[in-house]
Length: 149
Image (cartoon, rainbow, N blue to C red):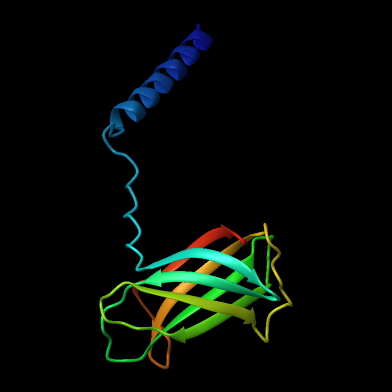
């Protein structure tokens, strides 16, 4: 008899916890949706082998700035932990007009030697930076995976 009472008490407690847990949950709560990424003012359109370098075609727009603006591009391999990078930078024209530039990315002194081959997939990073401390402009960064031509 005592055993039945124990089992009955256990079952009652289990049912109470299960019901309270379900009843206590807010069924309308969903995970918050992350905000969309800010629009980018840079579009990386092509990567082409040029000897041991890579030509990167970029279009960009930026508002006039009080400091000089630089357009920088970097090309990295897509292998796990790839430290191979080539890069380039040039003065950017910031006049609210869509600009087109082709930069020749060459070896960066601190990086491993890297010459992408035609048909190889790479990551291309483009960014607009202002001033001597190279602060990135709002919406001035783009990352794209491309097949080198």
